[in-house]
Every structure is written in C-alpha cells, then in structure tokens.
Amino acid sequence: MTTLSDFEIEARMAKGELVRNGVARQLGPACYELRMGTVYYDLTEGDRRIDVTANGTVLIKPGHRVVLISFEELVIPHDVIARVTSKGSLFSIGLSPVSTYADPGFSGRMGIVTQNLSEKFIELPVGESIAKVDFSMLSSAARKPYCGQHGFQTQIWPIRHQLQKTYEELKNDPRVDSEEVEAYKILPSATVSALRQIQRRQRRIDWAILGAIFLNALVLSAVTNKWFEIAVAIWTNLISTALVAIFVWVRDKE
Image (cartoon, rainbow, N blue to C red; front, side):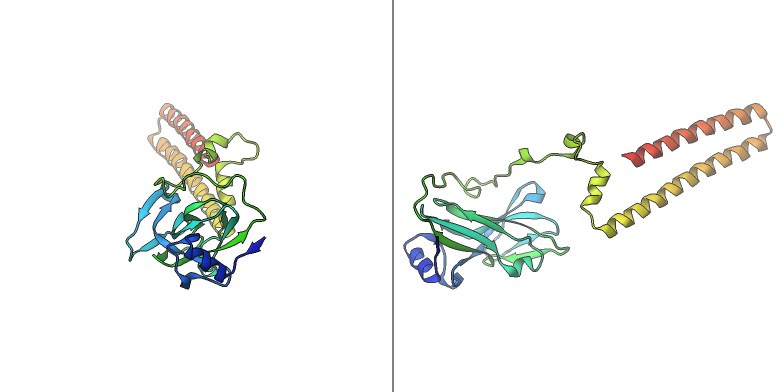
C-alpha cells in the first residue's frame, strides 16, 4: 500500500478525483487539509442541523458532540482508501481526536464527528482547516466499493439511536449500578466528593428539623396539661415523624 504525495494528490485533483472543490494551498506533504463548510449537526441538541453563512462560524458548546461537514467533497476511486485524522491545533483546545476513513467508491462531503471536551465555547470560522486526509493505493480495486448516500446528502445525519439505552431500560442489568452511582462514575472525583458532602449535610439538616418538630409537639402538649390530648399529639407527631423519615430514606435511595 502506497500513500500518495502532495504532487500525486494535486494531479488527481486536476482530473476530478480524490478532492473536489479543493485548492492547492490546502495540500500538505502527503495529505489534504479539509476545510469547515457551512453546515454542521449538533448531536447533543437532538441531532439538529445548523446552517451558517459563508462568513459565519460554527459554535461548539462545552460538552457538546457535533458533526462538522467539510466544504470539500471526497471522490474516492475503487482502488484508493482515504484516512481522516484530527489536526493537532484543534484537539489541543479541547476537541476530541478524530480517526475515520472513506471507503473506496465514497463520494460526498465528509462528516467529522468530534466533541468539545473543554469548559469553553469553541468557534470555528467557515473555511478553517478541520482535519487531514491522506490517500493510499490498494493492491487492487475493491470488489465491493462503497455504495449509498452520505448523511449530508439526505439532509440528516444517520444516528443509530437504537443502540442508545436509557437507565430505566438497563437498570436491571447486573452490570449497571444505581443511577446515582453511575452518574458519579463519570464526574471528576472532586465534584463527587463535594456532592456527597452536600448530601450528608442535607441529611443532618433533615433529621434536625424532624427532631425540632417532635420536641415542639411535646412542649405544646405539656403546656395544655390535657393528658389525652398530649397522648394523641405525641402519637400523631411520632407517626408523622416516622412517615417523613421514611420519605427521606426512600428519597436518598433513589
């Protein structure tokens, strides 16, 4: 398998192969740098398709996963495979690394799936380089080249939602812990520690409130000096206190 040089890529581009709508300045020594187009999908916001103007920017919010659609179209011959990788300048500011490829026979704009792992908003100008693609010759043409429509051409991004499950759907799986425990697993340890401290403090406050209610009931009952009413008040408060305690216990277990 031989990787094509910049000279070979440019020669094929001139014939309408490999990269369509490309420009020579985007060529690297053995790759082409794909540029940001005017469409992207925010997968965190319901797979929403977002169109931006030619002079606009793509906005990637903290924690959001997006699909960046390239400006260029790839046109991959049956005897070539294209590999797409991140630009270091992008994952150094918080975008997750990209590693994908375009099969022999693929034709269309490339979708680059990435996520903003930083705590800041990231703006990508239209035309910004977003990934590198290199091309390698196969020993022979593929017998079953890629065939089908790319998500961009169908106006959607093909997300296999059937593979995604909610906690309720999997809560009985022995590999799944409680919802709270599973949530803690993906949080930083410092955040988990702070949340548990808050829970313990809230639990102590709840019990203090229950104790104050019970003591107040005893004092009021004693002041009235009516033994029957005192007994009824005590038992009523005991029952209500027990019910509240059970409620608090159940809430903490959820």
